[in-house]
Image 1 (cartoon, rainbow, N blue to C red):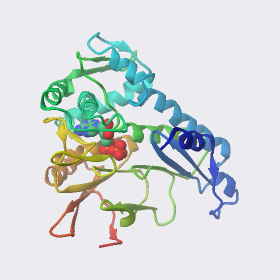
Image 2: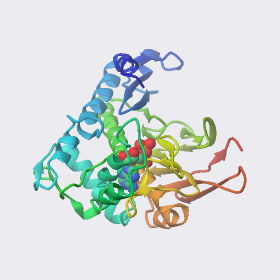
Image 3: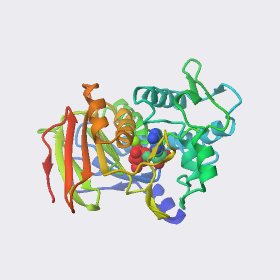
Length: 335
Ligand code: ADP
Ligand code: MG
């Protein structure tokens, strides 16, 4: 998106009218945040333009903390002080990094928030990613490991090992959804759906029959592939296609195997995770994408509060769709 288009998107809270809500003006709003469209629907009590604005402001505040795209963000400043011991941070940065670091341990490094040097070497923190030479790629991979980040919560502080860069791109949108939903609750909003570029989705309250969720076909994002309904919780999807480039040797995507420092290349096209919070759903969808369907399903079996849907390329143009853990009935809407 160009700067001009982005500025326009930021300036406008677009209010929808396609709603049976008595105060339709308050019921739907969209904003461009964290590099994607964020859509808020509030089909219940407490919906107001003020509540929507406060939720978007909360996400904009977190973007200033978590974005690797902005040299002035808190995470960029922390990365610049890697190797200099424990640095004081905001509570948000410490909390989300703590969750990410714990996920690194429980996923045996499939999810690793110290992936930043690798993401940077491949240029995925810019609009023009490209395959690095072998030597810088190897060097970047050497700075990635769960124990290269240390978090303390009281008072909040983080230490990064020398040349290690924190990257919370795999969990930050989910965290932002959870915090924005907290803001809406504080405004008295009883029902809400917050959809972050279809990659992170969170809800407040329940609707009759459950909240409908539609997952796009990873081969053609304009076509719906799967749909299901969930009573509560959050949903996140991860795939390589949305942020990828074609370079020497094929197509490379933005999800890396931290153990090799190279983009995950497998038959897996998409992983969707259902979890109690958007933070966990987001982190796990990235982790399960790295693990693959078989190891991912085994991991999900160890977490009763989580469900996952794996979409893999099958024979010919076919898809192989499998589920693990607590997943509602999934309908397939296209071939
Ligand atoms: P999206 O941002 O499209 O929702 P993900 O949640 O899967 O997708 O996050 C992908 C981002 O996470 C990458 O752009 C990168 O910043 C970061 N990342 C890539 N590989 C990993 C990994 N193995 N562990 C943690 N974060 C990762
Ligand atoms: Mg993720």
